[in-house]
Image 1 (tube, rainbow, N blue to C red):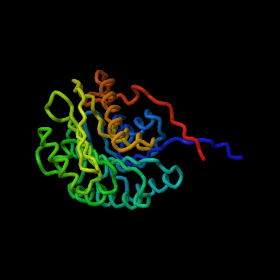
Image 2 (image 1 turned 120 degrees about the vertical axis):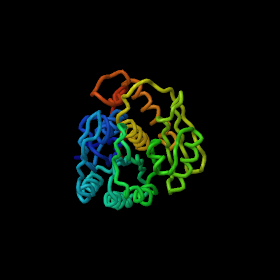
Image 3 (image 1 turned 60 degrees about the vertical axis):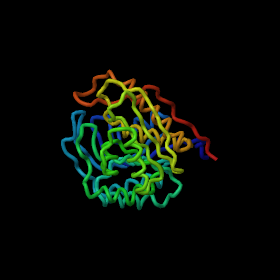
Image 4 (image 1 turned 45 degrees about the vertical axis):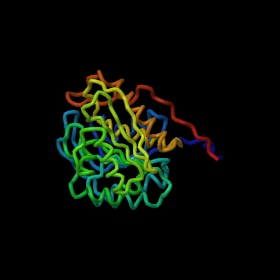
Length: 279
């Protein structure tokens, strides 16, 4: 007799490692868990890093990444996918090949190119492959201003320039784009969400004096994926995801973890795993 009566909304994170626990797959799994979803993962790379920066990066063989994704999806099929560090063109192809079988699967792509510490994390020739192959399958792409400047090939120093850059990135084949304005020298933190219908939704939050923002982009994209896994609309998921990271930064802003850019507080208000009744 099968006693299984319910399941959990699950999120698969395809991302790099962070032994210091604040970014990458570790941040993703903390976020997904804190929001009441079940986290699974596929490791794309092994950066050797701490809160002070990245010392070196060791690649995971591309075919191994593909096997990880295939093995997870055939057993614990995700309700949403978050993609983070993808640092080679071959890896882009492997991931797209694995996910292209599932047209209705929500995908959030955080195009990790530059770490909070300023270290570049991606090979230059990979960017065009990301744009051509990964952007079209992602429901939302979440670049920060450094990444957006690379993608739009322009300086971004104002909200108006954010609007220009966001439209340029949308023209690269994105379904929607959340452009994060945390690096702007403004009193408030402004992010712009470029929707599939061409409209722009603006979000504003107060800024906090803190250097504890390590992994904030990983955390935000995982939060959006978690809300999509729960059945929220794209706009709802983007809005709720930003509220989550805003609170995670606030509740971790005075904590001393590490000697550099510290982590956010993923567990400021942890949720129990959400039970979905099985048919």
